[in-house]
Length: 238
Image (cartoon, rainbow, N blue to C red; front, side):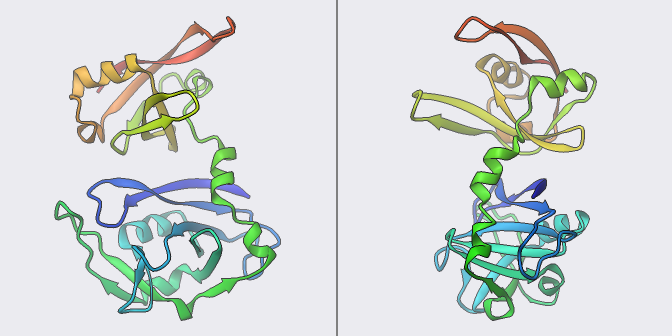
């Protein structure tokens, strides 16, 4: 499997963008999917937030649908509670019912609703091939010093507000932002210094950072075991 892109959109009625799925290609040995298919995979809760009882089906944001069209997606897989996989063709969604969804702050996030009976359930070993968590962990979509060294003049464009990530193992917290670097979506782990530099320019509310550009550079620092390594520094905020 090869990852093409992560997809971000409104999550339920929350008034901010969040990760909602990812696009893969080169999926092999799965019935009804060819190696040439471009597949969007999205995890869903069962009868809680994502199932539309009135329509007996699931929703796909029009905003997401438009992103899938741009990325030439052909198939959609909904992963229901990590155990049930529902397959459909992307073209089915445009012909489905439509629902006007509104976030808590009044933003409109219209949904295409496709009945579950119109989808194909992937059974048995086929489900084993689509483990989104493991794939994301292995895909390495974090911005690295190596990325910056390779493209020193490319800005990092912020596309979502920041998220605080807690580590129970190390009892620490870090701020992550999503953005595009050289037309590839990346997650940027911000050091306290980098977060402070951005906040001094744009304010502490990370929602206001969206759309701004970060000019980056690298510098040498020591790891906990005394080895020299490259780290990312925010040189300028635009």
